[in-house]
Length: 71
Image 1 (cartoon, rainbow, N blue to C red):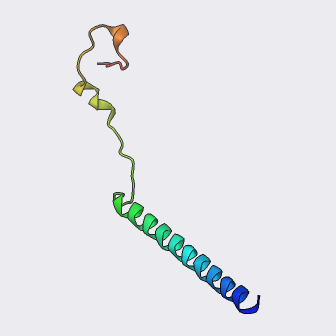
Image 2 (cartoon, helix red, strand yellow):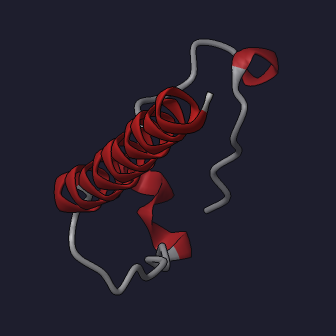
């Protein structure tokens, strides 16, 4: 079993090394492609002016509205 067993061991190591390198490359490509599709940062929140309620359409009834406009 000397040479045949040694040859099998070498082939098995090469297959495992090739599989591991393929997984590493695919993972890196996945991360790179995922990051390239996102919009650039920095992300900020916008503040709304409380006076913008006048731009909303009028309510048919006061009970049907989710917002209230105070004069």
